Image (cartoon, rainbow, N blue to C red; front, top):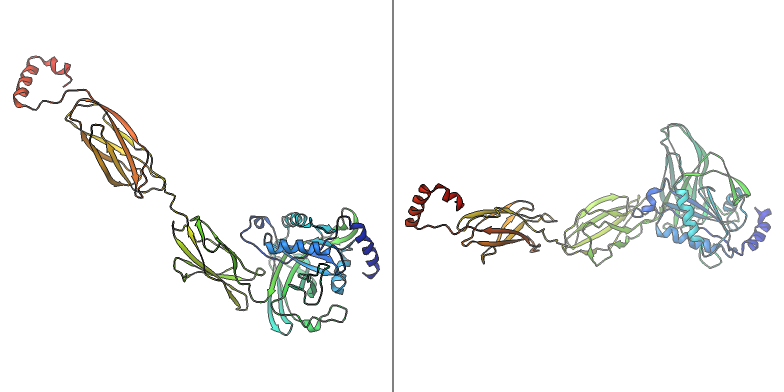
Length: 496
């Protein structure tokens, strides 16, 4: 690496027109983000950087924004070339052209240079890289903190393929934020700076089998190559990242599209493990105190760090809500359909694999008012003509969008009305009888209202009563009967 440093310095000046790139990444999964769902695996980025590099802080800052956003399944590490010989050796394997250079998934995508526009390019590369077809393997990590810079690190790789899997596992031990005095030129400590490997070896796994290994990693026994060991690292500031690289060779270029070739081996899976207590759950959605929340809203929060933290969910209408879910891995919860105009309370308790917990505050929100919709205009059916003094049955049917029960009001058009008869189920027929006492044309007007008092539009039906009122005097009835017996056609002519 020392031999090419002068070339890199020259390269920096050549690249200074568009800046230098600095990378930082640590894996964080956000189950609430839709883009994550199209990823085939967790993406890994390696940022080749140096503390003297003037543009490298732009790359680190861009990667930090991406990682902390939680928008992608993504981890990264900063390879601080001038402070760590192990980082410098990895940069040499990549045959870097200039600092900063970010290698995504072992060189599937390479970004050279730095500046204020790096974040957009990195996001594009992470999305493209994450959609690659990869081998069906799963890598997992477990880390037990033993105290005094010592950890028991266990890595496992499951081969779900039908054939043997060949590759290499690298387990990177990093700090969340450098405590070694490794700062970029903006004065910020490097984030996720690489210290040394816990594992760096070739693996071969038969179909359906699992590779696993453990190591007692003591920071006192590892150093940066310049006489400084890692015995000062602290619980709560360590991220261990396991990355499995496929053994298939690809031609990579550290200065795309065709300069500084290197042997590229792409990543099939990545996992991270934060060595420290879980973060206190924060950033609730809905926000604390929110009103007008949709009754079908999912709850979400920010947890972590890493993907090994689990969560207990407390939720309900009591100010001290009950436990509803225990030990879930995602940072979203579906409470199902909630009631209208109701205040709900919730809190999250985060747990790590060693039993450490962090309890969030009790949050609350209130759902929207009932957006009740009025029923439809009733359909009215029944006899459209008749004779005064005779009772006729009329049917009324309306439907309600929320399937509420209904009541019917009927104005018979003759100065009389039937007042809110019911209740009836939505779409179920209501029947009412009525007698008109005089001949004429009448408009039946009916409306329905639901159980919440929402009144719908009018339905109408025109009815005619053209015949004379029926005579009920016995004397005249006897005369009519004699006339009808004598003149049978008279009854037909009178329509009786």
